[in-house]
Amino acid sequence: MSSTTPTTSSMKVTLVGASGAIGMPLSMLLKMNPMITELALYDVKQARVPVGGVAADSSHINSPAKVKGYAGPTELEAALTGSKVIVCTAGIAQKPGMSRDDLFNVNAGIMRGLATAFAKYAPKAVVCILSNPETALVPITAEVYKKAGVYDPRKLVGITALDVTRARTFYAEATGMDVEEVDVPVVGGHGGCAILPLFSKATPYVKLDDETIEKLDDHVQNAVTEVVDALAGAGSASLSMAYSAAQFAGIVIRGLKGESHTACAYVNEPYEDVQFFAHICTFGPEGVEKVEKLVDLTPHEQKRMVETLEKLREDVKRGLDFMKSVDSQ
Image 1 (cartoon, rainbow, N blue to C red):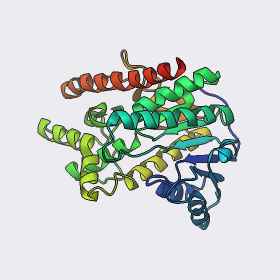
Image 2: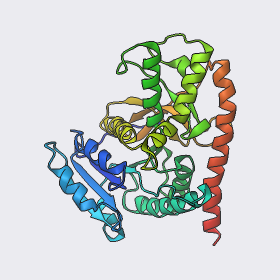
Image 3: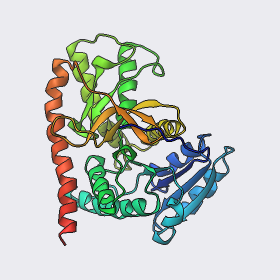
Image 4: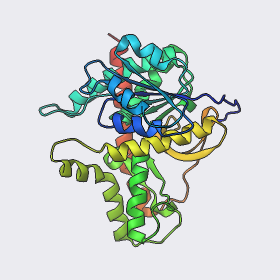
């Protein structure tokens, strides 16, 4: 993956799913980003919170971005046209009595429809997917783009930044270091055992005993349960997710402006036989510019990688099988 083309100073960002639990705080955080000149907030008309209200509220923040809300399919073209970055957090949450299969089928259908619009109206935008389960939805989006003849793997990523945020926080707590000065790469994917934090590559590096590493690893994998339990049925992680997504979007935008930065992201760059994998990526003017090779994993990380890859094989296959079933109808 390489890039050379510079971009102009205008920076339109479209947030899809702006009225949701993640979308609303993310709208505010994106509005606060001084590099964004235009912020398009999109959601369905039946959203519990009207997206026009989210846009009106966000527009009062004294930062450069001009904000406009768009509701429903007839306004999606206007929301997307001219966008350099699309952040997608659309989809439904799992409801009582709904199986994970039911949830996947609904969100896969939503993602396929949105991806079709992305490919049509903003084919050169960097698409950043936050929707659940992104490890299956990113491959679905890739297939939609291939079918439309506009697929560029540098411009399609799954946002796994929340896992990095959590790993940094928990690592800083365990080592007593400044949480704003540490970094911990997290590879693999997003969700349960697909998440693989690499504490052996943390910076600044502190050697931890095996028991501490296992506890930290488990905490990062299952941190969402801590939030869900604390909310007592009232939702899931949204504030930390919005923060992480906003930080990630900032890195993508700086890359588009020619200032390369690295971040972990779920991309169409194989690891062994798995076609989609969260790597440490460098972002540049065309999206993903470079992917770092993983070397020198510890015995613990090698062991964990086995189950990470097994989970990702299932998720990627699920997304591709969904597209095959839809295309055969």
